Image (cartoon, rainbow, N blue to C red):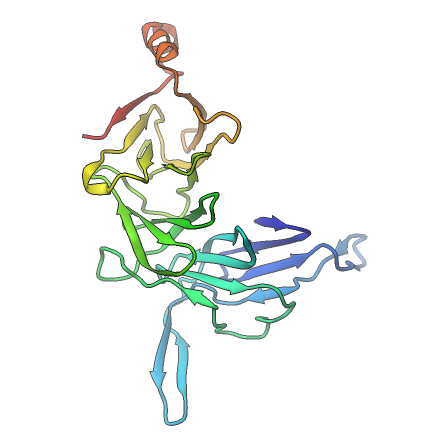
Length: 271
């Protein structure tokens, strides 16, 4: 869910992106609650679409039923545009949300822009999360083909860079990502037991990501503190959240204390 000046957007497994305007009056009902109706609905936002040439015009048809929308965000400095990504087509799409109902009633709506699939696999893989840097120019997408793709948010098109590692795994749509406050580093979860830190200014072929090792289950949601650039948070299926501090002296002290062995993790370079 995303909130912007009284307007928020939600996405779901039914393939819909719904936009809600809290400035509009709610409708009272018999259950004593007031209900808002969506101001706009984008159906099948990221379902795979096939175009065929007809005698008069091109026809667009849906080609699969795996249409979940896994991630949405409003663009910085262009807040009338909403970006979406999903489980099916491996694409990022932009939608203009300035007019109420502009997409409602259309089973196959047309985005104002979309990326080009440039994945490493022969078939499109889904995208589990998308994040945008503070400048609004660098858009990162974590894909279920175990690769992170970087796009120019201003023009989309094909990806400008890719990041991956031999033991980095993203095979479902629960794996999240977060950017450091300066926009240089990306923190991601994974479907193994680790979180990863990627240097976005270093080409993938020349870098080994930093691996945060300490969880005993899949790492899903992650967060980078906006107040302290040396503090990270990871959430895992092992039922724990871990707070990570980039403090060498504190790390040495923790590792030397055997009573804290199960409570602390460590950061290593992937090999």
